[in-house]
Length: 239
Image (cartoon, rainbow, N blue to C red):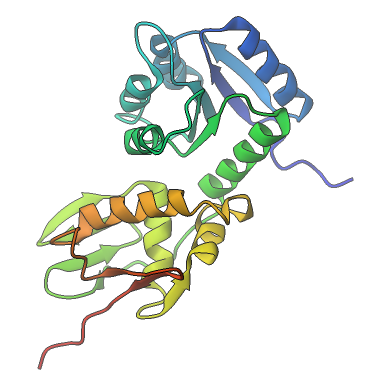
């Protein structure tokens, strides 16, 4: 039997329903994780500060401070991976979760295996990708990309990228002018479990465009190849 690389990872489970916390905790501990819990958003923010979990599983619908607001507060001081739990499954709810800084989104009801697999996939992404580029890449007069610092420089201004955003941009930029199939991007950036989640990819492409394109509705760098995938266009140098 192969060793579990995630054994001992500390997971913070946040939910205002004690039965849900016990259900999640029991099954995650069976899978080798260590688990701590919080019953509301305020307690979750404090435990992220003091307990330094490896990942947070957080319900959206909670009294006083909902999961979205708790996540926004967490993102002011921590890049800890966060998976949101909710009974909703609408595109707008997913957009809110990812826009607030979530790394994944699982809809209730879910199986213990599904949640565990998602946790492992997010932990792999958080710890398993690095770049060696030390110098910014000059795309054209207005855009440079600094992978070492996870930043883009647009018109001389540095703009921070979230971990998932820079992983996606990295794979696009490292294959300039080539069409990369959506399924391949999803596997490279999120993992095999996400290879069919084109909605997730579409959301993150929109986030990247909002940060680097002069007109996100008429992109010049990240182009959509309908029905296939995406292509990062490097302009021809002017003479």
